[in-house]
Length: 74
Image (cartoon, rainbow, N blue to C red; front, side):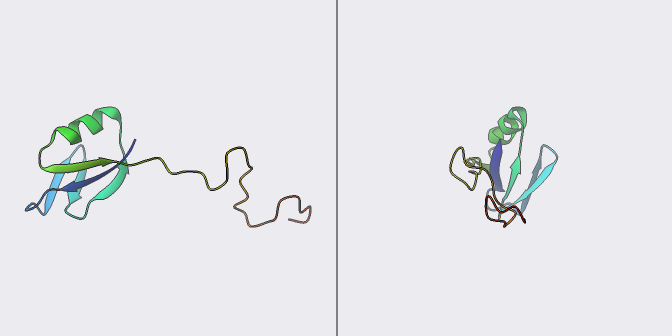
């Protein structure tokens, strides 16, 4: 699960679950157990992020290599 975690003011830094968080915060992938531990800490602000969406529409092939679809010379 992708989350954004930051330390609450006036803390400059808070360490939990093997990570150190600043007031700026950072995004990271955590397990459900880590998420529960982070949310239980009153000195941290934890925001769950949405998973990144694929670039193409559902069902369309991914063409991130820059070559147009169907180009046999690519």
